[in-house]
Image (tube, rainbow, N blue to C red; front, side, top):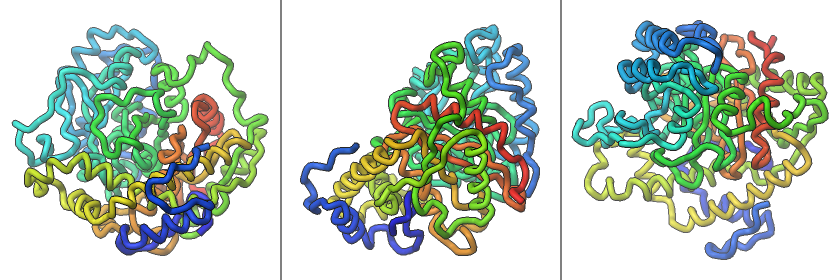
Length: 494
């Protein structure tokens, strides 16, 4: 039970043990279980196109030429990868002509998750409700204005190439029909699977995603890219359709940690390179590893890669220590309960109008499940969230960063996940448990987080390394990613 950011990875209906789980968590913390009592203070295929062909984010280059290269790569490989919901070739060319290489991103082609508004382009959220695949064109949402994060991209000199695929309403981790460019028999992860696949395939070097419980970090890890979710408020969230409003954040997926740093600076998430002094890598930094991080189940190659990563941190001058997040095991169920409650609330009117049949089968099943969860469970989940935030902040009070694998497994085959289970370390676990195990804590605790490639397993499939920092310490996190990147092994962790 006391397994750090882990959780019981067992099957069974999610709602079956809610009262028991929250009762245990609150009782162990010395808190009464009354629903409305004040919450405690929070204290083996090659990539379809090598990503390196895309050029470095923000490098000096003719915007028109950059856009044409991106469109050529999309035309050449997206029939297999299917990362794009819509490619706005005409609009991208026109914007590149106007751009003139201005701003820190200098005409960089960028993809935007099809959950985020781009003026004049439909936002379908991958759903027939909004004119997505199989939906009616008349139901499309075509915004007149950019989302705040898109407006900031344009102000920094980016050129929007189009909309990348999303799992329907961001409520899932497979993002069909998109496939993983590292092995197209496998899923890209989700829900920002199209953004990660577009970057991994070399179509673009930067894409926007959203992250509610790992939806930037999961596909980034599966596809072998970098991902970054800033502290709340660092990147605007207006104009983004919600999954669960209290957990949602906009994030970046990029080809490398260096691209994350350049983009985060250009988007004013962290100070520009010429501004305030940056932390000097790992020298003098303390990195905390939550107790039980490598508890089974976990793929052996991922555990070995993580141990090597910690050795690298020490070699780079960092100090690695154990930290405790006593109720980390409750994060997965608390996170799922909050997501179910808030997602059901958002879609309740749609369901009431008899529109349930327009949802994909998996999303409809989750909404049906949400209707079975007692209302009081949502309140208790929020109380556990406050408890977990306090524990995470306490752990971070003695260290600069937390480190853990991004995923306990590599990207599973698409034909192996239809029943909602995935292979992890020689056993089968629920996809929700595998995907949220290391990821949902940062959302529950409102912490900045990032993932970067950590080599591959014995079959050549990407492994991810995750960093989590205290609120507002985005610069420390991004600096750690860029410092660690040159030391990252690019082959199997023998």
